[in-house]
Image 1 (cartoon, one colour):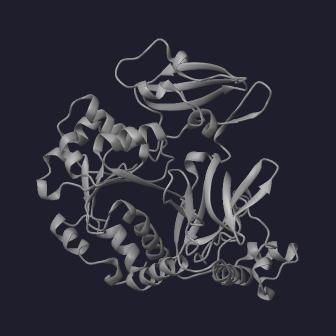
Image 2 (image 1 turned 90 degrees about the horizontal axis):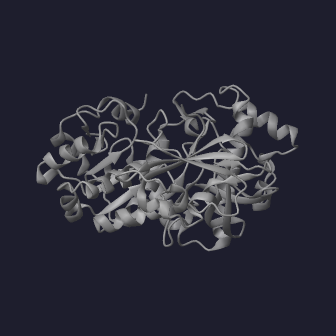
Length: 446
């Protein structure tokens, strides 16, 4: 186990003064992380200045390098490339990397993890896709932590974050002690999102003023609901947060535009969101327009290729030699702007393959368009909105009301031009995944 993984797993519950002291040391000077972190920060800065042809050369070198490694060390890619008559060791220019076959999650799921991984002495196991019903396990290398931090800090800095700033994180951990748990390695408080917002609010309110947070970080659905709960219940913490919170760091979910705008207004701050996967093949951040994502060419190669159902988003991870993802199909359909064969920005227009329901004609109705592409007054009266397919042509809109329930939910939802019978059901709390996330599409509910 590397020092970074040891610290992450074993040193996270040291007292606050220890964590605060460590947080004052910039990542660029931290043992075990500084070398890779500084190289990636230089790559990020350099790529923002490179003209198109030189950016192509950078991408070509990185993709060719990982493809050659996979060809020589990972049986899955050896067999795949030989079957397609592709030899990355003979690549000479940018167009050559576009001959590499596209890899889907299903193809990786169908083979053992060791067959699609390299034999490296240091690696750790990761898993993704549980909330989408498509789990996939794979390995990562220890250096990926420093690589990830360099890029994430570049995103979070857009709302003023620095690594010595204190955050409260709203995520899905079930091992939190006493509602609010300090993590000395990451220098943040983790909130127990299952404890009830009253308990969380009281704990944050009880913190000494010198250790109150400057940022809220985590699942957008949880952050938005917490802040709106403070407003609805007149909790004094809202006034405190409004004076101290500098920004919202929104990860792991698509931020509902209406709830995002309300929360920013309540706190008087801005927010930043990004697009990424546990597979670490793509990382893209908002720069100007919300929900328009700009990939880091220093992180991975991002492509948009046409298909029968639209333009699909592909990603290639440069640095994971343990379980490579090369021309990996994310399952997302996008509207993309590209230059010199490299995606510069994109907007997700249809969610991942699970995020749709079926109408009476057997057509897919993608929830990104149905829920976020229409103006629904229902957002003004609900804390959470989720969708469940009951049968082809029939679906339920699951609503957690904001305050008292209503009898006219149907009139608040724009269901025009749909070949779907809709039912509206009130719930006291949203349906969550085992990791604590609030998915838009509910695949199984009792």
